[in-house]
Length: 573
Image (cartoon, rainbow, N blue to C red; front, side, top):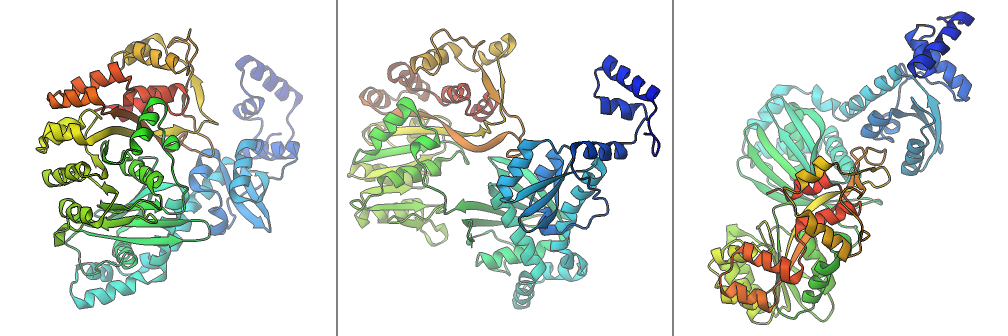
């Protein structure tokens, strides 16, 4: 079939022989030999499969239909939606026999999927419509005079407020912000970054701890975006030189999310970072946060103690606050009074008295904590111990019969002791008050349905021995019956990410890796002798059987929860 005619028997015989010789697919050989055009071959395949053929190069697709399949899924799996009739969704695909992707779209859209075969040109054309459909959301803004928008940016005073408020209420700007927020929620983003540059505004989403470019907007819309978000967050519209912080909430039948807004002046305007805080998510437990084994047992035991300190350590973004909120949720019963002093208040919790730090009026962690202890609390949470005043107040509260929960910025559990000593807290006070210290990091969880299996080569095992005590980790794995007694590192089957329709990067969600230091009597004696962090860690590993964060990560990698690469990246100092 040569563009209108039929293929000769000689051509077909030649194609069969070439396919056998080269081990290529028969369709590819037909194309290579020019026996049939790509377009006609696709139509022929559609006829043979009994599936209608769809040419979308001139198809007008409504934006709301297009967006039923998110752009990342459409681009990666070459599937687009182009028509909807009642409960039926027409989708065009390069491979209509990809049942896994079809089933995923069916579950996601709750519609009956009618697959259609199409060609690469059609898919490529439709993919360009995603950006065009987004442009339609703010097309009116782009049409405006750049000069007028620049004037609004540069003016100040009462008149500026009126102009900015008007822009913030313009329908296209409202749609842009709604679109940014909606897509962030649907993609499970934890943060939205709106970053102005000289000629454009870049929007990025942080998903499972990793930033991804979401879209690029023209610089002309920046003033309106800032104004709209300031209006939603009840911030000053005429303040462009100082940082501002605020909050707003989005609530629909499907989700309820609070947004913590931070606006910071930068060279090309004002940068916005919005932290997404789902309010309708189910409460966490220590188990689903990733605590396990002896670490879980030690933490549960110390939570029940009536006084002392529970410290959680780690860098920014390691999930410390989530761990503390989970502990508070466990402790939050009608017979106790719980008060917190935080900066900022991440989540609102019922029956807990939460106070926001306001340094500009003198309400710091130290002064707030001083007032809290006069409120007859049983349990106190201090968002972070940053200085000597806060450390002294927290220690005194723990000494006087309160259970105190707080965070520190240290790299390990044992490192919390030298950090407190640096804040001029006496070693005997640390030994008398600290009950348990948790250090943690977050790693991405594998989308296990698509993850692929692999074993370690001799070279990989040799490299791992440079960063981890593999003999000790294997002892832990066998002691806890995670692997059989005859297991070796060469025989363990690890998992690594593989893209899937549900997870374009092979990961979905995050889990913690932990080390938990129980401050028992031998550890207290070491603290009073001014033992170093390394000495405390060696004792805890040898005498308590403490599992370090790196070792906990290896265990979770062996269990298929995450990948070894994720663990190594998270635990690098």
